[in-house]
Amino acid sequence: MGDLRLAWRNIWRNKRRTLLTAASIFLAIFLALIVRSLQIGWFDNLAEIVVQSYTGHIQIHKKGYWDDRDINNSMAFNDSLAAVVKSNANVDKTVPRLEYFALSSFEKQTKGVMLAGTDPLKEDALTKLSAKVVKGHYLSTGENSILVSQGLASYLGLTAGDTLVLLGQGYHGISAAGKYPVCGIVHFPSPVLDNQMVYMNLATAQEFFSADSRITSLSLTLKNPDEIGNTAAALKAEVDGGKFEVMRWDEMMVEITQQLKVKTAGGKIIIAILYMIVGFGVFGTVIMMTNERTREFGVIVSVGMQKSKLAMILVLEMILIGLTGLITGVAFAMPIMLYFKLNPIHIWGSMAQAFISYGIQPLMPLALKANFILSNVATVLVIVSLTCIYPVRRIFKLKVADALHK
Image (cartoon, rainbow, N blue to C red; front, side):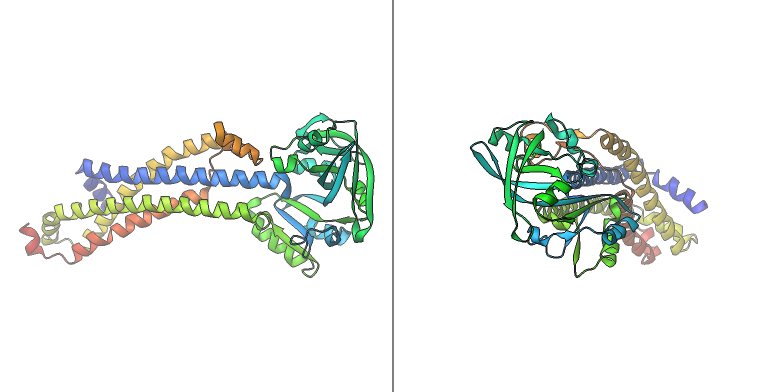
């Protein structure tokens, strides 16, 4: 305790030098936390949008389906598969779907569509599909009607209450044909989805495609998304790997994942450069401080203080300066991160329109997670510790006679 008190008094003998060093550390940790929080918050928000828009956190398919999305690669949704999924404590919701292409026709207009048979209640719990209804009403369980996306409805010239003809190829090449009343029109921000989606009850789709009790995918949402890796591994161990494949959303959305990795790497490089600049700044301050106090060190050693104890006090001084900058930097950054986590930054103008066109909300929330805060704090502490090597070496190599003449 006495050494700590002495170190604390020493750092305030030259207030300007201490404040400049602490300020550089404060600025480094403050900017690093804000930048990293913005990146992680944006990426987590994007991942959540992708998950909630359609895919779920994890999907189970028949082996080979993701590479060849043919209805003949559908799978039987039986009790054994349902039991495996239900037994995993981290699985929250399950949405079975039967998806395949069909040809839609209304009066003189025709267009290819993506037909998705699903459970309306489960689908709505995952994707909030009922909130996207702009005309008519949402699909009810057991209802022999369909939901049509707004862009597709506009192209075909139909509205709620009209009847749409669907033609296609069913399971094992059986012809698929049917007429279905349109109960509602749904709008998707993404043009890709808005121009081709048709939803119907899963049982209706299975009847249309002659694929009784079959689905093409089982989408899962998780209670704790951070455990997606462990959950996927556990499911892979439980299901028959020769029949089924378990895929995480980032394995299915490869393009988005690659973009996230590139941007994450870019952000880490920026933070690394920031820390490098600060590290050299702190190191320069340490060199200056050591050279200025060489005579002082010589006097202290000459009156009997051991070099090891003097080195320890000097290390304590640097740690105290580092902690001063760290604590104030984190203290200033945390309220900002918390505020913008609860109140995301709204993006306006052309950038907002670009986000909306891809089905992404034009929001940039900040993240507030202990792991990246602690990692940045640890990084600064490592930098401060490394800068202590120079003065410690100088003290142990100190020649008292030479130091007294400086």
